[in-house]
Length: 237
Image (cartoon, rainbow, N blue to C red):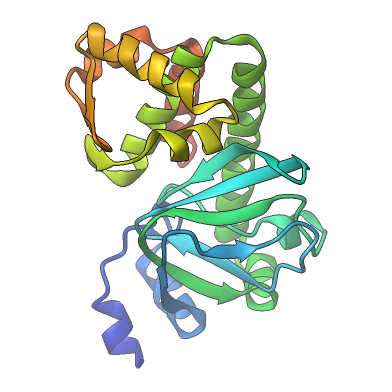
């Protein structure tokens, strides 16, 4: 695809959008548009990170596996960030699995090209450093939330973060999928979702979930969500 065609692709990624137009155009020669397919594994634990991804849309989850059948979502990224920070941090491999859990599109770049650009482009390097701080904040908060907060609060936070990255308050999602992400039994998710429905904050039927009262849902959520949201809104300022 030539550069003129690439320039016509909507730029949804906030990290790339923060670059001056001249710098972004220079990067285009090394960027490739790719589809993010639901369920696609971008990389496995201890697998060499050969490419980095800047989502324009969709969601990628970072999953950690403690035992063969026990996994937990420890972080997620949408168009606010990137996937494949390990090379930037000085290691070729990631400890987690990166898996697509909401279909979208992304810009893909070879990790070697990305590192070269970061060395030569002070602004890009600064943006990546700030995003690294944002992601570390998210990972630490998710870890604390998983340990100390009840499932209904964790579910609330997860729904809000998912909605933010999908850009919609209506989506199709199963209880089993949510239970896999949060690392709890499906019955616990059913009870938590039922509680939110009783409060008229969401509606959920046959895999169709809608946020009915976002203000109320945010008020009900634990402080973890508000902290993460503020960090996300301010990290590029």
